[in-house]
Image (tube, rainbow, N blue to C red):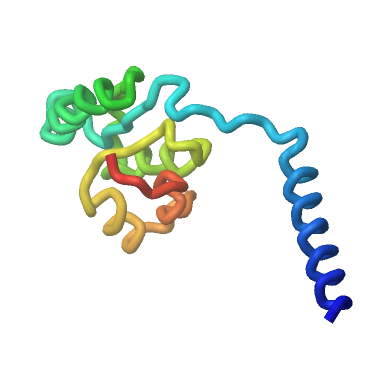
Length: 127
């Protein structure tokens, strides 16, 4: 019976040490968002999705207390815009707005130089 208690105590001490040593030297988490967010629209300015992006940007600015930059990247049926989002750092600072044409149909029809499934924020949270 005494052996069980010693092994349990040793296990608890080991877990505590691992937790303490694991936390030493870790950087504090960055507060999101700490810099402007870029919303990429796969159509030229003045269209439906541009207007929708601008309407959505205002509540995002208020809720996140950060600037939301609208960037219109037209051309190639939206593939250029989605490619820019897919190649952006997966940190949630570059988002896209569009339709199934850009995100699904283009990937099904064309051989694209990027992976469409990587064109989403890592947290997959909806704003």
